[in-house]
Image (tube, rainbow, N blue to C red):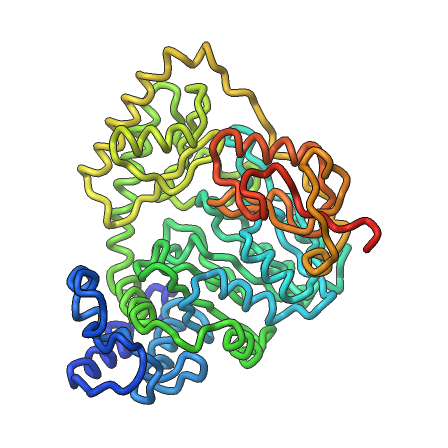
Length: 496
């Protein structure tokens, strides 16, 4: 039996999905919400498009269907099966995405003023958790890839140094893998933290599948981490907004985790999303390896074809061993387009308008395509044709428009805790007058949702230029109250 997912016994079962179907088949008379009552009270056009089956299990937490806030029946059974599948002691389902699961992790271990060690290239939900908990972030510089212009993971050496300088830290948070499919040496980081009695929390938003194939990076649970928030809807096969929070070991109180989750979770939980988690877990355990075998095979073939196209580069295993890259998810196709003299955002628009292709994300230099078992050979061949045409069209212009190298800016100095900055007395100033002031809002490029500024940081001219450069390139700079990024909200100087 492969230890990557533990016992297969009962993993064919889907108690939550089966229980919902059984309840729907009874066709009970419903004097409870939702008010559409199995779709009968819903717009006919929408009902016809979505289908009666889906609407029949859009239900509420009545006794036969269990309650996510205090599961004892079919939800508990489904969560227990998921825990076995992921090698966790406990698994909690989330119907509010991984963002809420991440906030739950942080608030479960950090009180106001507590320190948490984490990389600077974190998703905005992590900083939301820091604000809500009142924790003080101890930021680590992630390793920077000079070719791709993206951040990778943090190194064990950086974590060891931070733990030595901050022995009172309550947790270490790690991204595994990153949005771009790169993972650091998580097992080593866990070993270093546990030697100090410090729990390790993992943002596994882009790694719900890695547990189920030996060619993938180690999952958080395999590496011995204490908690991991995993986006099953991204790459695990469940519906959008459904995720899991895995917990193991004795450094974390599961009662505390459940209490925090209950505070953040809606009481009107979606049973459609919960059921999709149940069936996605079954599929990953029972046929996940075979499905991922195929996805890896076609991804590697596509990677090789892309690397034959002039002026394009698709990252492969050659990246490992440098810049904090310890392991790679081969199903992520990170394609550098900067040699063509155009931005990734321009390529994203070109592919959309010319070939009806939608990519996962783009940045100044790259596009990211995600390969899953659902992709067909025809889909991938169209991608290759499109990239060949892109290269042919733009290679003649590359000498006329050279992409200027632009390093990621230095990490801003944190002058005030994010929570204090968020709740401080503030004012709005023109962005050119904001340099040297303390920002009270987020500024980020989304996707991937990594902040350029977080509340409490001193605004530097370098970071302002970087934000504006992304905005001018057409990338989705978000978070600030001013969508045009002409002004920023800062702390009033007389309130400090």
